Length: 101
Image (cartoon, rainbow, N blue to C red; front, side, top):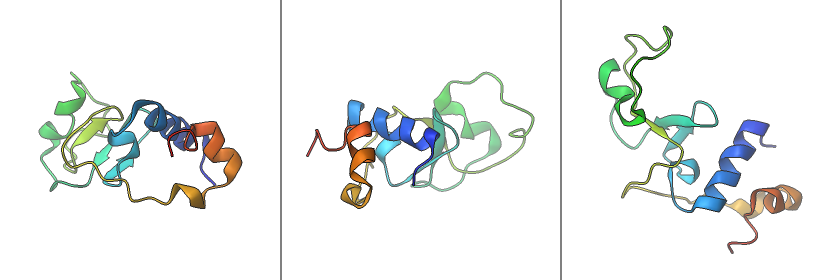
């Protein structure tokens, strides 16, 4: 079952519509940001550019990887093939998945 952070992401997605929060390419890092695995890895300097961050924690310094995006980011590569009906009905109701079908 999804954890609290995932529930925040799922609720955001169902309220907002197509965005990183609901994209199959996106791997969350926390309830706000995640990695877009649709594109190739980039340099450490480029990773956080789309988050408009001026500094990052020391654990991110010098670490190359996938571009990080905010959960609400929208691009032309959005994909949601997840079977939301596979989740428990109470969870679907809480995140708003039933209202949009």
